[in-house]
Length: 370
Image 1 (cartoon, rainbow, N blue to C red):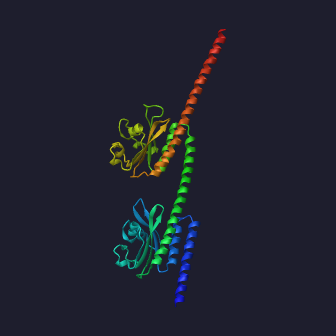
Image 2 (image 1 turned 45 degrees about the vertical axis):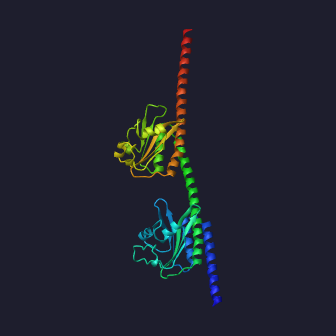
Image 3 (image 1 turned 90 degrees about the horizontal axis):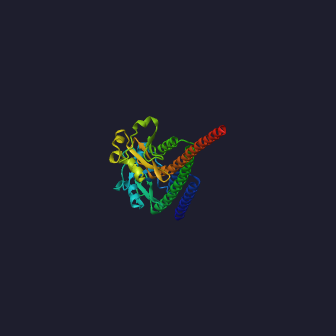
């Protein structure tokens, strides 16, 4: 019997090593994070045959919750969404917060367990749960369960699960890096195409229109306005897009308010709720603008324009969106400078032509008199 037991342990060890190797290969050969994580869960279930369910939760910074990303159990859509946890809530939330792995011999006797509302789904009886940790810290948890038997798992099982959790961390970090590179490449391509479009314009109004339309697209806002001084310090021209929302445009307040602040200080203004900021023109609020983003447009080291991107929905403008706008503004400034150079050259050519015409006319008169 000892030989059979050792042989069984050998086969289990062999299965576990194969599962780890296969998962490692999948991480190196697959770019889709969800596919890799699904492979991690399935391989873990092979390596730890005492389990009949496996899942992975990842922490979502925007909601502050642990969301269910992968599960071997076929939850309905509502049950799937219900399997999310607040930090510290349920066994998964506790493991994430404490960063401690656990073996739960009997889930029904553990005060940390939270029963799902759907009574058709039987709670697990025993459970393993470990944190998933990357260079950025704890990013999620990985869980294995047995549906009916208590005391199904051992310390070696927990150690093996921790190894697979490490692979899940590598998989998600690799996927994020690849996604970041792809996103940066797409942004560069987008900015290049916008640069070509902006530089194809000759008139300043057309350049500003492209700038406003592109900003709307990047920020997801419905309306954009620029109060433009150009070369003049006195005359303000206002341009807005789209045409059908121009009735929402308000006159700039140059003594106080946001337009004055942008022109005076060159500050970037981010207002997620216009009703909570006293600097916002009451007419802007009355016309249904709930969130806005404002920034200066520089020209020859001075502020020539104040841009505002307005949303009719409450919106939070994140750092990445603001960064993209900051890359876009110099493109417009260069195009406007070029337009001004062309205008100046055209004026000089007209003056030259006028002078040449006068000189020719003068020579003709002199010749006729002689």
